[in-house]
Length: 104
Image (cartoon, helix red, strand yellow):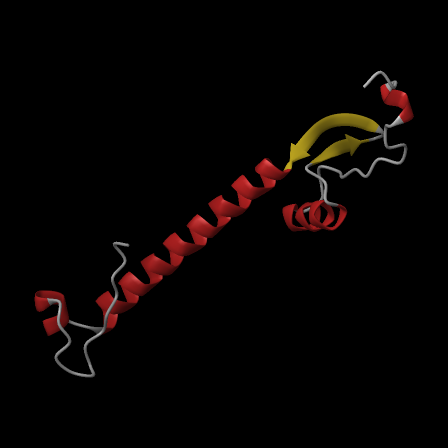
């Protein structure tokens, strides 16, 4: 623990730029097993992105996609179907009943 940091520091740091995509950064972090990646612009450190930042972004993206799919399904059901017996009773009564439970 008394060894100077300069002796164990990585000399060729892997970096990214602000213009890179999140998927590209995620791939680089995964391949290199990095938890943090310096963000550099014009040879100047402007920030650090963490694996937590990447995961948070991905979760938000998945939540948006899920909401869009639920909205699409709800609007499609509204356009092509009248309320079915399933909607009234919670039981399927024929092969034409459509199940779309978006409350989960």
